[in-house]
Image 1 (cartoon, rainbow, N blue to C red):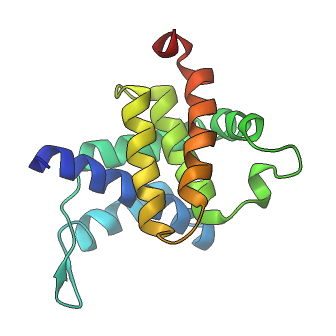
Image 2: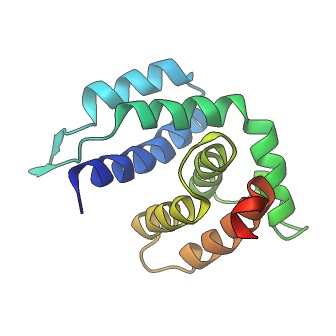
Length: 152
């Protein structure tokens, strides 16, 4: 994997973590973004070095997730089963759908790239579960709504 691709992948993972932290701790985007950039990107934890993230992509995803949250949450609700609205799903998945949805709505990456990247993020958080398949299905539905021309 190229350094640039690895940095974009890391930015997406960090964006999900940041959005989760913002919701769980009631923190604002600028404070969480600064914390991640200062203390997580490339940091050493228990002898392992965390990946450097693409700061520009990280900031864009977090900012767009905040700015477009209502639209993204509505798209996510339409992709979910009626009995499971977004406020009832796991908060990590909610953060993931918000990050991916923001990139689908406002990002420049092709929808299939966004889906693949965020399915990989789901695998990082849920390595043994069925969540990655669930994420794939929901994001496919969201992508077809956000960028229908990419699927024709």
